[in-house]
Amino acid sequence: MNPCKVTSEQATSAIKDEDLLLDKQVCFPLYSAANAIVRAYRPLLTELDLTYVQYLVMMVLWQSNGINVKTLGEKLHLDSGTLTPLLKRLEAKKLVERRISQVDERVKELFLTNEGVALKQRALSIPNAMFCKMNLEVEELTMLKELCEKVIKTLK
Image (cartoon, rainbow, N blue to C red):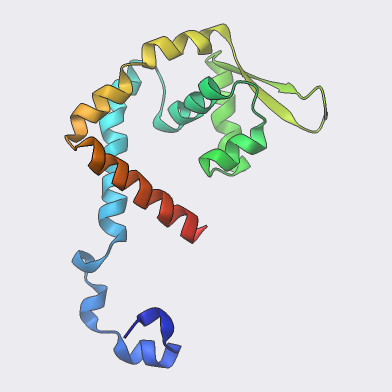
């Protein structure tokens, strides 16, 4: 029986106590793996004086300098309540600056400072260092990434 194709009454009667065991959950290893990855990044990012989420922002800006704040939030799945203080800290570190758009004064755009551009060179070794720490084959990492993207897309 496919649990997604039954009535709520049928689903309730089909649920067993063992369905609530932590070892049976997909969410827990995914959550734990995400935490482990962030912890593994920490010593590498400490050298750059960045948190993991700040690093994500910088990666987006290294690819799309001048992106507007709303688009950045969508790309990183972050709301403005999380993004605003994060951007203020990056501004305080003199890595980014927010400017009012020339096209629409209601829109704020993010630009790298010279320091932000220079930081990219120091960050170039991080992806390979993480690849080595994870000890997975390229194909396995690709599959993991694709499955995570599928889950995100499905649950969005």
